[in-house]
Length: 275
Image (cartoon, rainbow, N blue to C red):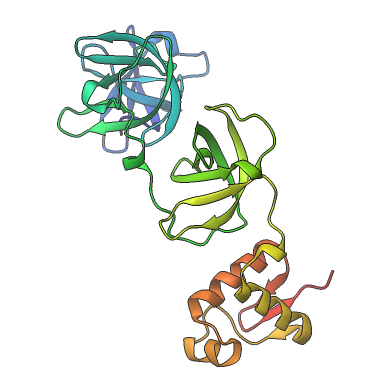
């Protein structure tokens, strides 16, 4: 079992303090009585969040916090003391935010953006405001894909967002015409994957007029020839000779056309879909 995520565990035994849940390795954790329901019985599976209680004991809860391990969300500060701050993340025990993980002074009842992290040395979960270090660059071409967004702070260029709970992104001022509240969750579309792995986001689906030249070239060739006897498994030499582009670029173009149902893929060919 792992701290900070939803674990699916089996009820091994039920006692007055609660049900003891067991993972595949035989490790046990207590699910306190207050979380038990009538349908929970021996050997049934239960989905629980694993954390540490106030006495540093591993414990399970059927409640779901406002963020899971590696996830991001805006949380309200419930307490500040000489050891750090505590944020309300939807569970009985507030989330500890050490001073070293704060980018600036925080105030009770104010909301700030946090990521949930795990300290291997102390075997504890903690909140951190060091968001940039926890975001991954996007290494794949996902142009045109629909993505989940967490609206963050405004900047000179627009509004920063976290994309698919993983990547950093930006919605430019000219690409939205409605108020965006930080902490709001919504969906958008990737308009560009930048060289640094950050994403440009729009609220409207992309049209093919906004696609790159390679995708347009492939689409035009398919409109004329209807069928091309190339696939993403074809040799780089055959692709370059026939299409005049690298295999990587060819595969990216195929992906974009396939997502928008412009082509049908077969083991030995690609066919244009007439509409």
